[in-house]
Amino acid sequence: MQVPGLLIVLIGMALAWPLTGWPIWAAGLCVAAWIAKDLVLYPFVRSAYEGPAPTGAAQLIGSRTRSACRLGPGDEGWVQVRGERWRVRAAEGSEPIEAGAEVVVAAAQGLLLTVAPATEVARTPGEPRDEEQAGAPTAGS
Image (cartoon, rainbow, N blue to C red; front, side, top):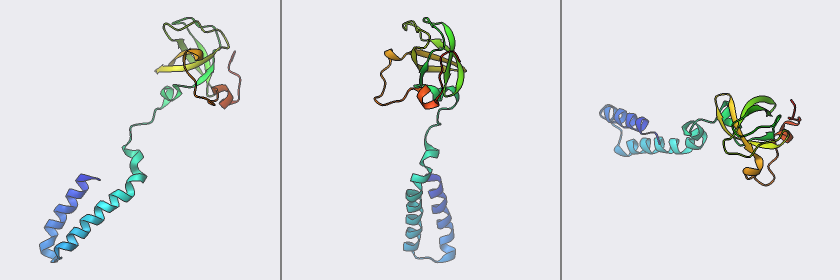
């Protein structure tokens, strides 16, 4: 329910009541209709009240693909995620990642993605790898 809107309706009704001569039950009915309107429309506008959806590189976190080159901890290289080529850094403290090994995007900072070996991150059963979703090979791209 939108409290400011309800307050405006109540103030407007209080100011208009002496001029209209409405019975008090009519004012109560208007307030009830205002509240019912908010309850009915809330499911349709709920997404406007939720936090912002991830955009850019942040939406790639959790994506799986294959490394285009060998990456040691902290090394930089390239992968292809969702049809785009991205600069990546291997996560600090992770095992070395061989070229063609499956990796998962663990973080994003600007245009640099942090990846970790997929063996270190549990996969949801039945979850397709990113290259299966994109339909294109990623190693050597």
